[in-house]
Length: 68
Image (cartoon, rainbow, N blue to C red; front, side):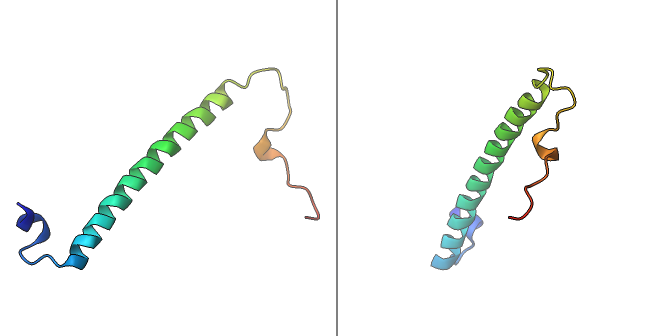
């Protein structure tokens, strides 16, 4: 079965490359899950922000201080 995955003549660098790809894919999956969780928290914060702020600007609308 490994010959089908790696080919008949897997080189050490090829195996190392496959290991690195596998590790990076796992890391991407982990980061995507963390991003989805952070977006869910942020969405919950936005939808739960009904404490009578009236016309107060949200953080995204406040300009950065000038001169720095």
